[in-house]
Structure formats: structure tokens, C-alpha cells
Amino acid sequence: PAAEAGGAGMAHVNGAGVEVNEHGMVTAEDLEFHKSHSHCWEHFDLGLLDQWKETEQVYCAPRGGALGTTLRCRSFNDDHLPSATAPHTNCDVDNLVMDFSVLHPTKCQQHRPNYNCDGPPYFWRYSEGALQGHCDRTDSFNLRNFPRDHLRDIFSGWS
Image (cartoon, rainbow, N blue to C red; front, top):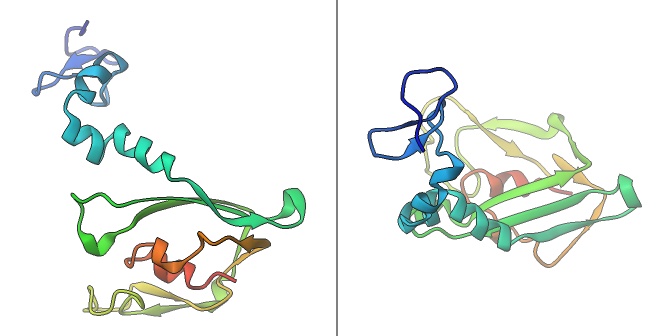
């Protein structure tokens, strides 16, 4: 049950009738209520994370045991987000080396030309070797599995 609003560290019901904690976050007691609103659950909430998690694949398998690099990615296309940002991908990597000397400022992204190219350069060109992993790429490692706005540019520098 919701505590009375006002006390620090106490849960309360927000203007939408949902119980939240002192940080405005939905509390565990309201997860069933939240799940019942499937549009939000599946496109912006923990349901979306569950769908992403189910797609996890190893993109680069480690060489050299514990010192090798592992790249795991999850990719999901949410049709409520702009198609130009698809696929919607997040990755975890262990033991990655980044060579900042081969990053160069640029006005436009390599894989999304003409997108926000006005003004000073605030994107980065990732030349080959910018990201270095001691691993073997799997068939899942393909630039098409990364979104054109940022990740495709970043992973084009993988060696």
C-alpha cells in the first residue's frame, strides 16, 4: 500500500495513480499494474529489456582464455522508434583496447551522411584499429547489426 506523500524515503502515489518511491521510480508492488499497460511495458520499460536480453549473441569470442576479448550484443528493432536508428543494439565487452590516436573529429557520421552535419565537428571517425580485441569474430559480427547513428561508425574501427 502507498504511504502518505511527503516523507523522505517514503513511497507515494503519483498523479497518474501509480505508486512510486521518493525518486519517482515505480515500486515493485506496482509491476503488475505496469505490465498491464503493454504499450509502455514493451516499448519503453522492463519488457523491452527482456526482449533485448533474449537476442543476446556473442559477436567476438575470446582468444587466450581470461585475457581474451568477449563482445556480446543484443539487437532488437522497436517499431515505435525512428527506423533510421535501427537496429536498436546494446553491447557488453570485456578486455577491449581503444586507441584514441586513430579517432578524428568529423562533422558527419560515416554511416549516416547528412545527419546533423551543421556546425563544428562533434562526431568521431573511428579508423581501423580504434577498437582492438583479442578474439575471433563470429558470423553475428556484421556492421548491419549496429545502428547507423554511432555504433556502426564505432564498430567499423574494430580490428
